[in-house]
Image (cartoon, rainbow, N blue to C red; front, side, top):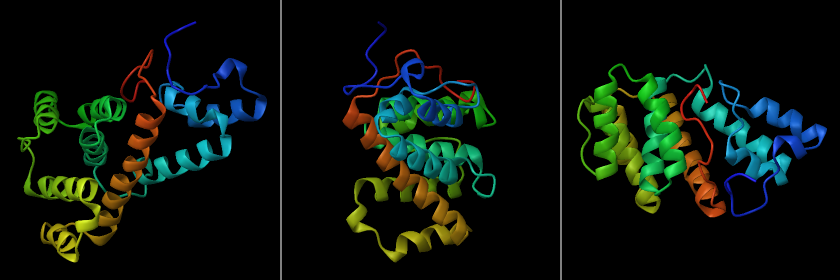
Amino acid sequence: MGKKISWIKVVDYETAGAALRAIYDRVRGPGGQLDNLYTALGLRPHILKGADQFYRASLHDERNSLTPWLAELIATHVGILNGCPYVTAHHGRNFAELFDAADEAEAILAALQAGADPPALDRRARAVLRYCEKLTREPDQMAERDVEDLRAEEIADGEILEINQIVAGFAYWTRTVNGLGVALAGERLGYGG
Protein backbone atom coordinates (compact mmCIF):
# COMPACT_ATOMS: atom_id res chain seq x y z
CA MET A 1 0.00 0.00 0.00
CA GLY A 2 1.22 3.53 -0.84
CA LYS A 3 1.34 6.59 1.34
CA LYS A 4 -1.80 7.63 3.16
CA ILE A 5 -3.53 10.38 1.20
CA SER A 6 -6.46 11.25 3.47
CA TRP A 7 -7.68 10.79 7.02
CA ILE A 8 -10.86 9.27 5.65
CA LYS A 9 -11.32 6.33 3.33
CA VAL A 10 -10.61 7.12 -0.32
CA VAL A 11 -12.03 5.39 -3.35
CA ASP A 12 -9.23 4.86 -5.83
CA TYR A 13 -9.85 4.45 -9.53
CA GLU A 14 -9.21 0.73 -9.53
CA THR A 15 -11.85 -0.05 -6.90
CA ALA A 16 -14.43 2.51 -8.06
CA GLY A 17 -17.64 1.34 -9.66
CA ALA A 18 -18.46 2.25 -13.25
CA ALA A 19 -20.45 5.42 -12.37
CA LEU A 20 -17.69 6.79 -10.13
CA ARG A 21 -15.02 5.88 -12.68
CA ALA A 22 -16.89 7.94 -15.26
CA ILE A 23 -16.85 10.92 -12.90
CA TYR A 24 -13.15 10.39 -12.17
CA ASP A 25 -12.47 10.36 -15.92
CA ARG A 26 -14.22 13.75 -16.24
CA VAL A 27 -12.39 15.40 -13.32
CA ARG A 28 -8.86 14.39 -14.24
CA GLY A 29 -6.40 17.25 -14.76
CA PRO A 30 -5.03 18.24 -18.18
CA GLY A 31 -2.14 15.78 -17.74
CA GLY A 32 -4.53 12.94 -16.89
CA GLN A 33 -3.85 12.90 -13.14
CA LEU A 34 -6.65 12.05 -10.72
CA ASP A 35 -5.87 14.29 -7.75
CA ASN A 36 -5.94 12.85 -4.24
CA LEU A 37 -8.57 15.41 -3.30
CA TYR A 38 -11.00 13.90 -5.78
CA THR A 39 -10.45 10.36 -4.54
CA ALA A 40 -11.15 11.65 -1.02
CA LEU A 41 -14.47 13.04 -2.28
CA GLY A 42 -15.25 9.75 -4.03
CA LEU A 43 -17.35 8.49 -1.12
CA ARG A 44 -20.03 10.99 -2.23
CA PRO A 45 -19.91 11.26 -6.04
CA HIS A 46 -22.71 13.84 -6.13
CA ILE A 47 -20.63 16.18 -3.94
CA LEU A 48 -17.54 15.55 -6.09
CA LYS A 49 -19.45 16.42 -9.28
CA GLY A 50 -20.88 19.65 -7.89
CA ALA A 51 -17.60 20.78 -6.33
CA ASP A 52 -15.65 20.13 -9.52
CA GLN A 53 -18.23 21.92 -11.65
CA PHE A 54 -17.98 25.04 -9.45
CA TYR A 55 -14.17 24.81 -9.39
CA ARG A 56 -13.92 24.68 -13.17
CA ALA A 57 -16.50 27.45 -13.67
CA SER A 58 -14.85 29.85 -11.24
CA LEU A 59 -11.22 29.18 -12.13
CA HIS A 60 -10.92 27.65 -15.60
CA ASP A 61 -13.92 28.64 -17.71
CA GLU A 62 -12.90 30.30 -20.97
CA ARG A 63 -15.71 32.84 -20.55
CA ASN A 64 -13.98 34.33 -17.50
CA SER A 65 -12.06 37.50 -18.21
CA LEU A 66 -9.44 37.45 -15.44
CA THR A 67 -5.95 36.72 -16.65
CA PRO A 68 -5.35 33.00 -15.90
CA TRP A 69 -2.14 33.66 -13.95
CA LEU A 70 -3.99 36.13 -11.71
CA ALA A 71 -6.80 33.64 -11.09
CA GLU A 72 -4.21 31.04 -10.06
CA LEU A 73 -2.42 33.58 -7.87
CA ILE A 74 -5.69 34.33 -6.05
CA ALA A 75 -6.22 30.61 -5.42
CA THR A 76 -2.64 30.28 -4.20
CA HIS A 77 -2.96 33.27 -1.90
CA VAL A 78 -6.07 31.81 -0.26
CA GLY A 79 -4.13 28.55 0.18
CA ILE A 80 -1.29 30.42 1.86
CA LEU A 81 -3.59 32.49 4.07
CA ASN A 82 -5.47 29.37 5.20
CA GLY A 83 -2.32 27.33 5.80
CA CYS A 84 -3.10 24.75 3.13
CA PRO A 85 0.07 23.28 1.59
CA TYR A 86 -1.95 21.19 -0.90
CA VAL A 87 -3.68 24.17 -2.52
CA THR A 88 -0.58 26.33 -2.22
CA ALA A 89 1.60 23.75 -4.00
CA HIS A 90 -0.85 22.93 -6.80
CA HIS A 91 -2.00 26.43 -7.63
CA GLY A 92 1.35 28.04 -6.90
CA ARG A 93 2.84 25.77 -9.56
CA ASN A 94 0.03 26.66 -11.97
CA PHE A 95 0.64 30.37 -11.32
CA ALA A 96 4.39 29.97 -11.92
CA GLU A 97 3.75 28.12 -15.19
CA LEU A 98 1.39 30.84 -16.43
CA PHE A 99 3.33 33.92 -15.27
CA ASP A 100 5.69 35.40 -17.89
CA ALA A 101 8.88 35.39 -15.80
CA ALA A 102 9.77 32.29 -13.73
CA ASP A 103 12.14 34.12 -11.36
CA GLU A 104 9.60 36.84 -10.68
CA ALA A 105 6.87 34.24 -10.11
CA GLU A 106 8.98 32.46 -7.50
CA ALA A 107 9.76 35.81 -5.81
CA ILE A 108 6.05 36.66 -5.69
CA LEU A 109 5.22 33.29 -4.14
CA ALA A 110 8.04 33.60 -1.60
CA ALA A 111 6.85 37.07 -0.60
CA LEU A 112 3.28 35.89 -0.11
CA GLN A 113 4.52 32.94 1.98
CA ALA A 114 6.47 35.38 4.14
CA GLY A 115 3.49 37.73 4.51
CA ALA A 116 5.31 40.46 2.58
CA ASP A 117 4.24 42.71 -0.28
CA PRO A 118 5.05 40.76 -3.46
CA PRO A 119 7.43 42.35 -5.96
CA ALA A 120 6.82 42.56 -9.69
CA LEU A 121 3.07 43.07 -9.46
CA ASP A 122 1.23 46.11 -10.77
CA ARG A 123 -1.23 48.16 -8.72
CA ARG A 124 -4.17 46.23 -10.15
CA ALA A 125 -2.85 42.84 -9.00
CA ARG A 126 -1.91 44.25 -5.60
CA ALA A 127 -5.46 45.57 -5.16
CA VAL A 128 -6.82 42.13 -6.02
CA LEU A 129 -4.56 40.51 -3.41
CA ARG A 130 -5.65 43.03 -0.76
CA TYR A 131 -9.31 42.19 -1.46
CA CYS A 132 -8.45 38.50 -1.39
CA GLU A 133 -6.69 38.80 1.96
CA LYS A 134 -9.44 40.80 3.62
CA LEU A 135 -12.20 38.51 2.38
CA THR A 136 -10.24 35.46 3.56
CA ARG A 137 -9.20 36.79 6.96
CA GLU A 138 -12.02 39.18 7.86
CA PRO A 139 -15.11 38.32 5.83
CA ASP A 140 -17.33 40.10 8.35
CA GLN A 141 -15.44 43.35 7.77
CA MET A 142 -16.09 43.56 4.02
CA ALA A 143 -17.65 46.83 2.88
CA GLU A 144 -18.71 48.47 -0.37
CA ARG A 145 -15.44 50.42 -0.23
CA ASP A 146 -13.55 47.15 -0.90
CA VAL A 147 -15.32 46.81 -4.24
CA GLU A 148 -14.85 50.51 -4.99
CA ASP A 149 -11.10 50.08 -4.45
CA LEU A 150 -11.08 47.40 -7.15
CA ARG A 151 -13.09 49.58 -9.52
CA ALA A 152 -10.56 52.39 -8.95
CA GLU A 153 -7.98 50.04 -10.51
CA GLU A 154 -10.24 49.61 -13.57
CA ILE A 155 -11.42 46.17 -12.54
CA ALA A 156 -14.87 45.59 -14.00
CA ASP A 157 -17.75 44.24 -11.93
CA GLY A 158 -17.71 40.92 -13.80
CA GLU A 159 -14.05 40.50 -12.88
CA ILE A 160 -14.85 41.44 -9.28
CA LEU A 161 -17.42 38.65 -9.27
CA GLU A 162 -14.80 36.21 -10.62
CA ILE A 163 -12.29 37.29 -7.94
CA ASN A 164 -14.94 36.94 -5.25
CA GLN A 165 -15.91 33.46 -6.40
CA ILE A 166 -12.31 32.22 -6.57
CA VAL A 167 -11.66 33.48 -3.03
CA ALA A 168 -14.92 31.97 -1.75
CA GLY A 169 -14.35 28.73 -3.61
CA PHE A 170 -10.85 28.30 -2.27
CA ALA A 171 -12.07 28.98 1.25
CA TYR A 172 -14.13 25.83 0.63
CA TRP A 173 -11.28 23.88 -0.98
CA THR A 174 -8.73 24.73 1.72
CA ARG A 175 -11.15 23.71 4.43
CA THR A 176 -11.99 20.51 2.58
CA VAL A 177 -8.32 19.58 2.15
CA ASN A 178 -7.26 20.62 5.66
CA GLY A 179 -10.33 19.05 7.29
CA LEU A 180 -9.88 15.69 5.56
CA GLY A 181 -6.08 15.62 5.79
CA VAL A 182 -5.61 15.29 2.03
CA ALA A 183 -1.90 14.89 1.24
CA LEU A 184 0.16 15.56 -1.87
CA ALA A 185 1.51 11.99 -1.79
CA GLY A 186 2.38 10.88 -5.30
CA GLU A 187 0.90 13.87 -7.14
CA ARG A 188 2.56 15.83 -9.90
CA LEU A 189 2.11 19.58 -9.61
CA GLY A 190 1.06 22.03 -12.28
CA TYR A 191 -0.93 21.70 -15.45
CA GLY A 192 1.06 18.67 -16.54
CA GLY A 193 -0.24 16.73 -13.54
